[in-house]
Image (cartoon, rainbow, N blue to C red; front, side):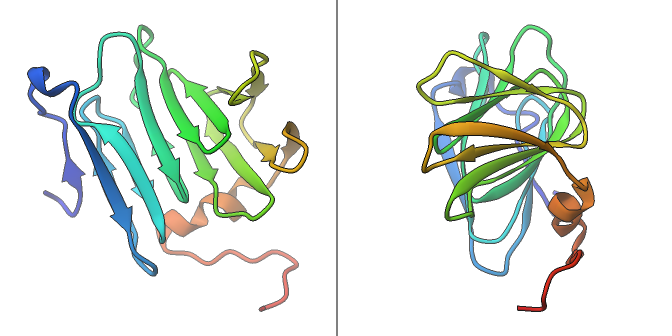
Length: 167
């Protein structure tokens, strides 16, 4: 409904069933998960998610790029598994991108998130206007200040270039 896939009224007993949404090249899509979280999926992206989240946490798996507007739930953290980087939140807005050849990126717009590499216990806290970048070659996560518009304009249908060649 309303140009989005809406799971907000999913049946409680369907907790263990997963769906995968694949977006083709040139497409974009909006999805409302059972907890009220809204996900904007960009072109050539894939999201695997449960029809209904369990009682302990809310976990999804992402390949590609997506913007998350996470519904607040202090009892169940929301976790995005994006290749070798995990992003953990309670309620916030952020963009995750795995399309890069050398890194996976998470850019925070509002709230706070914690990111960590898949096989490490150390979690790095990210603040609005910062990007956490997992560098595949070294296995390290780097934190830096960024212009958020450059990473989130796509969900509004805008191509954003700043000191870039047209190529």
